[in-house]
Figure: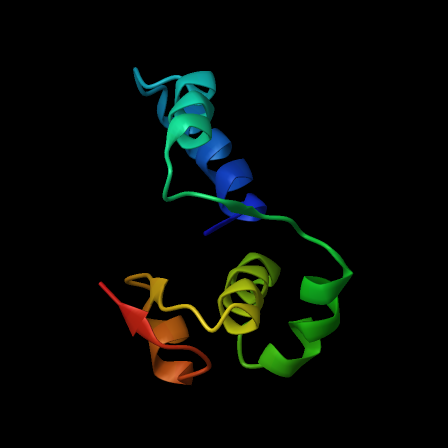
Length: 91
């Protein structure tokens, strides 16, 4: 599962760093991959955001809320997210 906010952030990173990888190619790979499914920013995610007050960044709250909803392990090296213990993490 990939929160759609992560896809939006990847576009910003690709544009900012002017990497050779094209955003449309990233999306194509995700579309054909059998083990990826986007998690939309919907009311189910938004309604969970207040539960994650120790995360100041709204993007982090969205990612953590998405993981919490699906009881998923979050792949991250973000120390603040790891320290909160809101969801299981691995890096």
